[in-house]
Length: 213
Image (cartoon, rainbow, N blue to C red):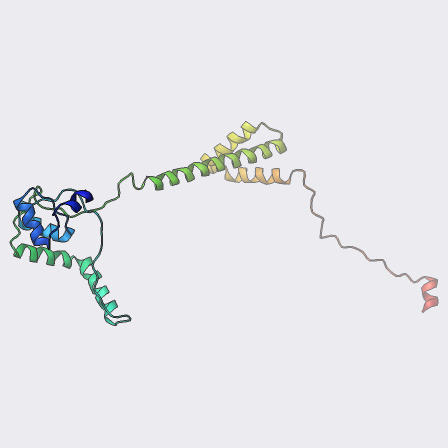
């Protein structure tokens, strides 16, 4: 494409000349999207092929540390939020005689929306985390059931059934807690009785003590 453009006289001085070439000849013209949208809305013989090649914003040049920078920025954001910029655009473009408002001859506003393909990674991460959490709970439950089953001398499957019954029936929560408490205390050395007072050796009135006195 560049070789064709370089070897032939295809460049124009301005947009007006480029639009005239498109209307009069079999010619395609690369143009700034906003200006192209305006020209297409004014002339029903023009149309846009494909989407935009890039996206660049407009800016207002101000001095460094100017007091107007924040004011203008806030005002532009406010106008954009309230839709005033779009209203002004529709007002002035229609006042210029824009008649091509059909879907076949006008350029629709580009709306970029996220599809399921764009956010599929989030659901994959969420599903992987959920699966990992379920597997962790199953392993932890199995290890705990095996420990309790070994202490109480019962089958691990019996203890697993008891755990599942407890999870599905909250009426037996007290029995379950007491059973777990007893299993934890099984084989443990009881703490020393702190209520017993230790007796110190007493000094008796022996003849030796009287002699020392």
